[in-house]
Length: 347
Image 1 (tube, one colour):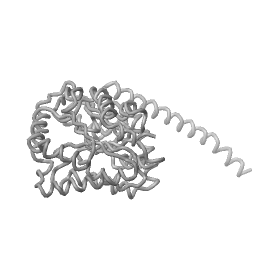
Image 2 (image 1 turned 180 degrees about the vertical axis):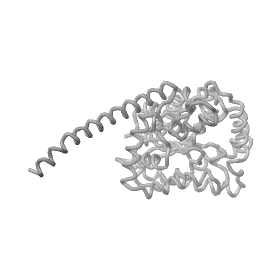
Image 3 (image 1 turned 90 degrees about the vertical axis):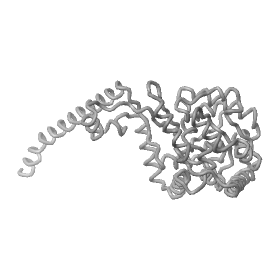
């Protein structure tokens, strides 16, 4: 009887606690939903963090299945200026993976793909002159090398964690760094206002979106001009350039030996940035020699009228709103100029 009395006396309490728990969960859910709705009303949109882990997950897809498809190796100009889905359509439905890394040279990425016997598709390799031809060592080479090292030592659990994290980040504004409580409080204390939406965000495909409408572009243009003048390393000596071209040629040859191919692409630049690039890295001495030494096709925006008409608002990157059209036109130019290379990326 004593045991029975004890058990029955706990039942109402347990039920009450259960009801309180459910009410608390309901209230928390309503508050979170309200916060999500409120931040979206202020212009915030979900975006993923472009981490080395996300890059590794995307890189693994390039070697999956039959190793075919197209990979984009470059810098933020590729990330912001090319839309993987649009390029896939323009090239007949092939898989397109964005492996570019912000502020980085494409050379370590090209070497990684060339060393991977499982990949035998098409590489679109960006040639941003100050990043591609500058003298090592500098930060534009060390960052992609670190990404590659992380990819080669990743674990299954890390991949699954990244999949879950990205699935949540691409759906919930509340996971953005800007709207975390400590950052909201800091913004209120320093600027006496709630956080403002960022001009940029990244999609799960690693495409970067940026909206520069309403911004004062003059400071951005001055910043990019200073950076391209000297921050990306020094111009190579003739011997250093020769060694670089020899290294690139060997990467291209290894890819072709197993049925793959490489097309080099120079993205749009404008204003002072374009003048600096052309002065430091004249076309005949660098771009033309690269294509000649590697025996590769290349597409430079300046030699294709439909691409040359595009302008970069801050002199270095295409506006997100123009990226789909530019991507489609580039895809059509690739099919016209390098059908054999495009076929290497197909099924």
